Image 1 (cartoon, one colour):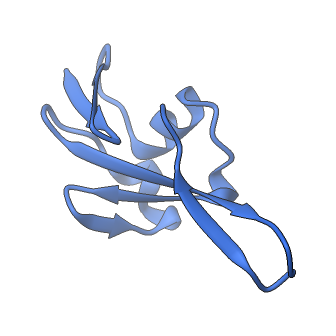
Image 2 (cartoon, rainbow, N blue to C red; image 1 turned 120 degrees about the horizontal axis):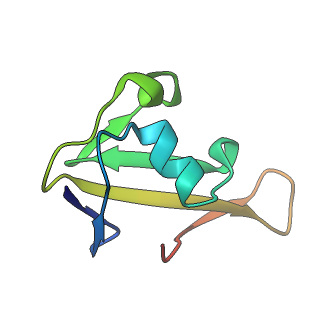
Image 3 (tube, helix red, strand yellow; image 1 turned 60 degrees about the horizontal axis):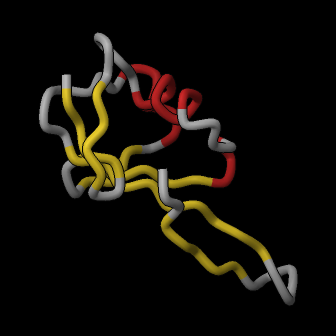
Length: 78
């Protein structure tokens, strides 16, 4: 199955949930937000959200800096 993560093609060997994808990409779940086919998916729904062929996933990784209340986001190349 082929999906696109942050615009890059990625082959998956079989049925994969968003939780499994985030784990496979070695991302810290508490510091990322996931969009699937242009819809934000709540973290509580990742384990039950199964990926389909040609899905488009955008993952944004939040990084802190400066003031404790200031957060910047950046897309992480995966």
